[in-house]
Length: 237
Image (cartoon, rainbow, N blue to C red; front, side, top):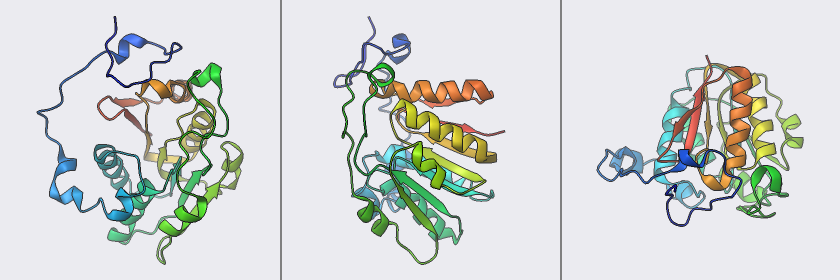
């Protein structure tokens, strides 16, 4: 029997259920996201507009900042209410780094559910957050160009007119848009660039994990799983 945390959705289609067994005890480990220095980054604008935990935001920001010396734009698919994009924008503004940001979402939740790839538990309109106008206002600033793109991936990918990316954050949960976004970003990610995937390890979003694994296996890319946060990332070599 595989023990998983209470409250998790355990789809019957879940691949490799033994790899989700637990729980581990992380209670005594160093948690820098609780420290005063990182807490300064969690401004009211960030906190009020994200469902990501401080731990996830810490890792996202650390990996993002590590790419700021590289050429290329910044890409986020699955902006939600815009808090994670605001965290990245604040990092650019604090360092005086000018990079174009592309921020994508349906702004209407899941457009449809693919039971075969994402499980019977997924329903249309789940994960609906702030509107396009609200996210655009949250990210408005005079120094960094931010382009908010509304609609369904993969259709909206054509509006992202960039040839190079230094960083990408993909948090769309479902198989088809995750696969399309990962393929798009991989082809444009510069050497040393980073892609961060949210909910890679969460059982309910196994469709996103299989999409990421399919794309990366075909390209010889190594995905690094972060079990405690459910995130994963890769560095393009």
